[in-house]
Length: 391
Ligand code: NZQ
Ligand code: ZN
Image 1 (cartoon, rainbow, N blue to C red):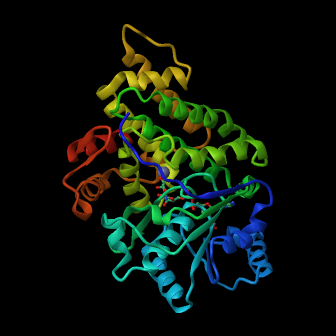
Image 2: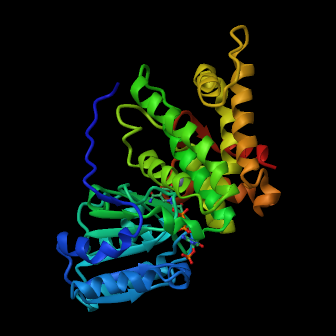
Image 3: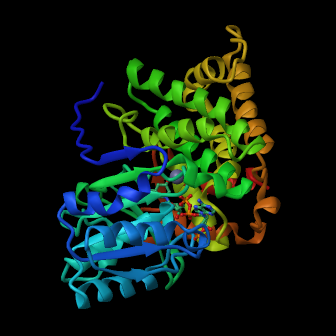
């Protein structure tokens, strides 16, 4: 196991009706003027925004509102949010929504206290200072409620990039699984896929003997395999929603990733798809993961065979472990299709003729060195072949 530090100070509040405590927690973490940031309308439609406002009113905490975050959140609204926070002397940001709203909130939080262009952070500068952020999560997916990361798309060039820093880890996150019961089945499935991707990206490691994190990841993958189909069948299944919501947090606050190298090639390859086609990140991952895994499998066949037997129940073929490894990738693909995710470029709305453009931005955009690195290093040629596998 490699040396590591782990700092995850988010205060989690989990369970039914917990959104009504938002005001209390804003106060606890020092907020006296709040920006409530939200998305395209689901929080208005289902009455959540009114409950959150009432909770702040109860604590006599003033607030301003900024809605309109789109899935795959854009830089334009971040600039708007930064201006608003400066003008209104906001000292706390409350994100009410999914990963996109939380990520946009984190970007505003960092940009408000920074002299330069907030995009600097999305080009590699670590975020060391930010306004405090709290979240009320409405979809189990991105894990941003417990992560130090934010992913934003710059409209100029539609470049989607991530930024990181402990300063943007939420001070508190309110997780009420009942809020996710209004999700359309497709969004639930995209969230399930993203959570599984966060687990696979950590499972694919070049560090030997990391049994404890291997086993944690396998447990969470087994949970997703069990609970995923249950929420697709019955969106109101609170217990299944609850298990998925906590699994989503654990999958991405890095408790499963410490002490080991991680992959993230699937995420990088997918981010170009959601940037160009505006597809759901999880849907993009459903098409990306089986292609990437098939392409890189030979780098460590036993790792793929291990997850195949331990999670997908495949029989180990000791004479030819590649057979087992392939069966595991096939089982993952079939699972994702069974919950309603797309299986190829066409179903995702992607186009073969765009592959050179996708590869160029992926490998060369924003000063990248002509390749991407993770479990294996992938050249432009490798990435071209991986996108072709998705057709
Ligand atoms: O905008 P509204 O109207 O709220 O609708 C949203 C949106 O259309 C809807 N939705 C959310 N909760 C709902 C609901 N509809 C009904 N009922 C509810 N309870 O779902 C749609 C998707 O929302 P979004 O926030 O985009 O989903 P998600 O949480 O999957 O976030 C995706 C973004 O997170 C990034 C992705 O790249 C993508 O941009 N990621 C962020 C990470 C991080 N910060 O650590 C890591 C991830 O790997 C990921 O890259
Ligand atoms: Zn993800």
